[in-house]
Image 1: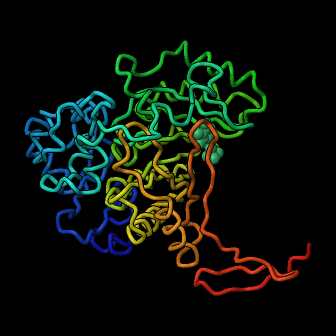
Image 2 (image 1 turned 30 degrees about the horizontal axis):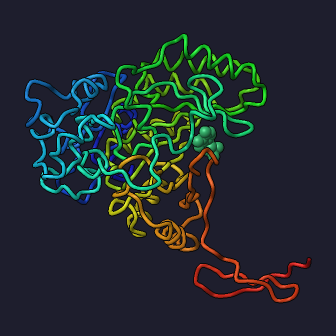
Length: 418
Ligand SMILES: *Cc1c(COP(=O)(O)O)cnc(C)c1O
């Protein structure tokens, strides 16, 4: 909803707009908005769809429970039996061997409310509900395809590039994506959040390595830690003189937007420059709740990028992908990377031919804002790092002229003397 419309509906404009979250008009009647006033530090948009889901499946709980992220974690769907209560599971989805053997199952009630209970082929449902195909191992699939354990000088640190490190602060996620690149890590259920002693050793490594100017916190999902534990990490890293920027890799804003409280944002913004890389997959994830969460983050001055894994039948359609990028820009998230799906065990049913990714990029460049275009990359098996792939725009040479093709396929010349 546009600001002016909101104002015209509410006589106490000034006051109301500063207290109430923005509400959004959706095409779909299912998503008619209600703005629920919860306790002051947690004012959240709640869609009618969420309320219906809550009422049907958690009759003993209310809106304040729903908006409490710890409640979302505690009440997540983690077993075949529990999923059976909300979804009509297909034969493929009911294979009990697919539950917990490779990768645990975990879906927040919020994300579960977005799943189509009758259609196993629905995009969001396929990303989190396990299927029997996960048990099939195809040629070239590996436990740790990126060889992260090889590039790990101390536990929890992956130091692959000259000036930045990946710091895996937890094995826990609020939702497990079925194509997770760190399946080998997060599946170790016995060890969930890492201990402070392990963190301290990793921080010590970063302190000693003055070339590290960029620290990327990932896991697992760092935003599943409490505010005080996140702050423990940020405070220590922020103090290190050579650490210029800190980034957090997360899917929490998409699967548990209730976690993005004002308190969290107020804490995060003390540690600028702090960036967030959010894992978004499909335009259906951009709900009023998610818009609200991302607006809070953006208003906290946190630059946001999105990392998307290309998935067969889910987001490999050029029009769907373009829609995702447009929806992201509207909530101030810059599409950052588009990944070819890593060859983790049992992921063949998700993997697309490379040409699909190139076709998506070809369909964006020139046809839409440059800001909407991510880098399409393969994270090279064996620890080679991210390698960019681009459609071929260079046609060839004619003497001192370079022949290049524009987005419409027309050829141009550019003087390029050797
Ligand atoms: C992806 C990644 C990074 C960050 O790479 P950027 O291209 O700077 O976003 C750093 N370390 C590792 C091991 C990574 O996989």
